[in-house]
Length: 198
Image (cartoon, rainbow, N blue to C red):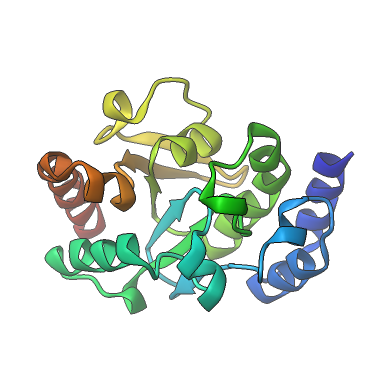
């Protein structure tokens, strides 16, 4: 029922502002009750590249913006390394409310929120989507394999109106725990830079 309600609600949004307002009123996801606030997006909705993470953490829940904690600072440095700042990208999450204790959202929670992030992508209409972490890639792109197998490969995200190039890469939080993987993420970011230059 919640998934059907989410689909109907998301379809009604004609702008990103409307979508944010609809999400603010949406009570179909239990995470809303335990989170401090909605974490909708950051950056520039007109940007050619959109980064999609999994769910907000504690810092994001406090500030109401995605990727503002330690992993957000690393993401900012990664963006700067390919000549991008927050004003040149658009950043969101599959799930816009923080799960208690920063746990991973359940598949059901992700499925309830999926119509909203799909609509957010349709309305922002970027040229490139970057899925930060395995759960984001699996939910958005419907792929089964883990992030180590899928990172750095191009997929297609179909909005119904057009296909958008999408690439999974490691989540910055994972890179903080596994710094040796940063060289792979760097390759992915160079590929993203190249795609944006085309």
